[in-house]
Image (cartoon, rainbow over all chains, first blue to last red; front, top):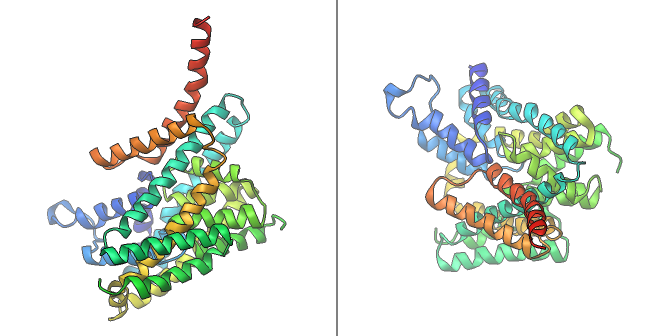
Length: 188
Length: 191
């Protein structure tokens, strides 16, 4: 079964472009949604929607890449080794493909007209980061208005303390978790 | 600090143990660029671009690229191992507790913990975006391209599931490649 899960998550990772959310979406499609209609599902491994949602939520609180959180899906099936099989399946495409692209890119990047291309790619990176930021801020406005103000206040103070006083991100992350527990928990 | 195999592993072990989601950028800048001075901001921006052209988890792709640039295949394997190990340990610990009553309920009821964490990530991400962007978005042309790409992504979100990262990066690259070419053609025809 571990080998099957490795192959399945290798495939999921290989087919998903655009970050961790497309991996979650594909996992949900393959292991939860497709299997709701029984006849469509030929898999032995199926997850309940509520288990999937729970692990999806908690995975956001785990430091490091979110692939560790996805690997949690494997724990009830076969413990830590199954988690490792899922994790390696998700990592393998990156380890195989990224070095090739990096090599190709490094070979080209010395050429003069590639500099223009690089500039556009870097502007695009900034726009992608801005969209991430928009997504995070939008979440803050789905609460009551007092909590939204607290949410923005936490985000703003973390930004200011990090930029102005160069306070370490670890401290700021821990502080914002505590602030969230105290301020944002109240009425939800 | 010297770039040895052990140091690469330890550096990414540290990065993996407190980088949450989109705040990873700020943690990478702080550790690799500002404190250890192993690479320039430019290299990090390139890693973000290269990573978007590969499938799989985005931040893992970035770390694979950085590790590979620092010390080839062995650097790549060590950096990825360091980066994912903390999350694997913590995930295993949580998974072991998750199926006991009360533990999952605690996380679900205390929604504020997650929201606070996300507010903190937003603050760090804003700082990383400014650091990575301030020497790129310097003039009117760059600002216009940035706004155009944001518009495309917004429109993509409205009408479909959204536009993939590498489409956006490709679009940005095509625009900045085309601008000097177009200028040259017009320069020839105008006088």
